[in-house]
Image 1 (spheres, rainbow over the protein chains, first blue to last red):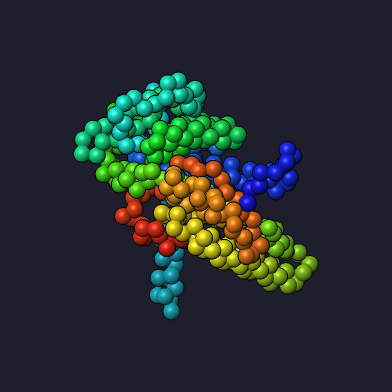
Image 2: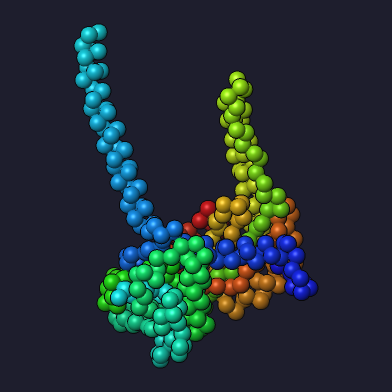
Length: 84
Length: 253
């Protein structure tokens, strides 16, 4: 528990303050009412919204590639099954 | 210029924004009001997009400024529903229109948190160093197995720590149960369990007194933060949750 002790805070007290501050930041950034307006958070000059979009595009690209590979494999499988 | 939303409150009878109150980028705070079946007041500011393109410590500073404005709203005696940091709209009209669309839901949230504050209580494990994961060596023929075993050890250790924290959280809840309207729990990356208790603003001292006598059974330290606006209880109305005075402590875990 946070104690009101002497003028020089000990390591635990310093860490406690950091933890409380970190917890507050986590809540401000991650909780609260989300209205349908844009929520924009940038980290290292990259908009997270854009990052999310890129992830979606990446996922679509991966899915397309997977689909293309699968399509390419199908004739091969048919051919093999035809041979067998 | 975009309209940045800080929080939503039940409407006031008179001007409620403290004179001279500013927030992110020093922009003055003003109130938008919407009337109708479910009237509300929104605290907003006009902030350029570039002002929100920040990262690192500047992002943390802005998040704290956001919280200061929300705290100013809380100080008016009406509990606000804080908006998530970064909520912005093309202009005031778009902001009000979006809020009006969710007026009923916002009303439910405001009713639920009226007269309440959120008290953060952190359960900090005394030992936070996780077992090391062994890096595989090319020369070790059983490196793969040892690597997987070390991962398994770490996972089991994390499960054990979480279970211990949950047991401790249940003891805390039992200790302050009659003062707590609702509860949300979240583990952070450092293994600290963050417990948010929704408590009547008039019961804050009683809550602190009750926690003064609480002694953790397991190897934890308990840290109690300052009361704040109900961030953890503004995401969705009570009707979406399980029960009043919930015995549903794992809601956000």
